[in-house]
Length: 299
Image (tube, rainbow, N blue to C red):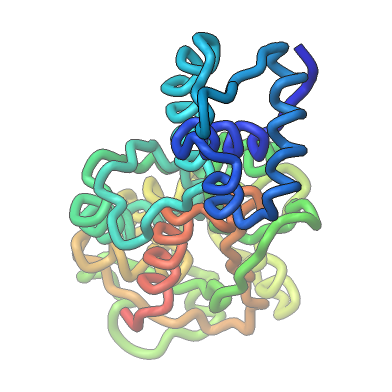
């Protein structure tokens, strides 16, 4: 059999449905001669007359009768593939969305996203990966849906939405002496600190700024995450530093006192990124717009 395309199958469906070259031409918005030419191509493709004259009308051959229903089903499936998902009804979407996010975002915004997801996409779920999760091709290859973080190692092909920069806050237990009075750089440096482990080759912005003032922190404990640092802070006399969103998301529940650092630190950029392959997907668009709205809402 020679090659054929969907347009030929649509013409075949029109011919079998109407039993008329003229009627099929009207349905396909073609001239009668053009439809006659199409019928000739179909006969060649299927090696069968398909429609033969019986008096004043055309009747399908046995082969054409056997093709009628399969062709209708194939065209219906093709149309379904072409249709966009209705963005007003995502209730039947069944997906696990993977978000790689800066630490604390799952605590600060996870519940908000899950509540919205339950309402709009109840068959779907969320998975958070830490910003340190190393998968440089994850967005491109579809293993990660959204990347929320500094974006230092992002591919240039990604779609990037800049957000407000991340600022650090200091935190201490409510009964800590630093919860009272003015916090100076010297007083801050002299306190006992819990520090979050930095990536190899990266210097702590706090230590760099203190060193510029001839000061050095008294770091007595280094932990792998901001979460661990805040929990230690709540149970001891140690001082912790955390990004503002994480600090505000967890500080109150842990009974911590927050204060502005007495240092001029460079803000750490925060960006939401995704791959263009996901840009037009209604479910993905709903998720990123919901997350962006939550991130931009004053806390």
